[in-house]
Image (cartoon, one colour):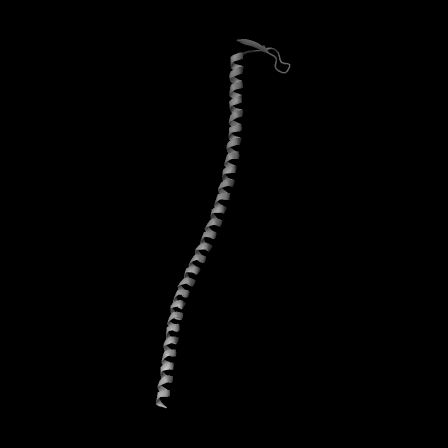
Length: 114
């Protein structure tokens, strides 16, 4: 179909309606692509921000995990030390008991000698 169009006071221009519709569709496609591009850029910015947040959070977790591992190792060392001290205290108690027994025996022997 051919129609007459007035463009800004110009004389009549005869244009096929199908070409106008095709041009309109192409323009809408370009505008949609721009919107898609804008949406994609916004998505990429959000993705970068999310990645940055996740990396920071992961680093905090890594540091926290290392701190907890240190504390666990310190506790293990303290437990081993206490266990060895406990053995030493136990041995010391045994030795003190043995010394006490020997002192008592010595005391009895001295009394017998008198």
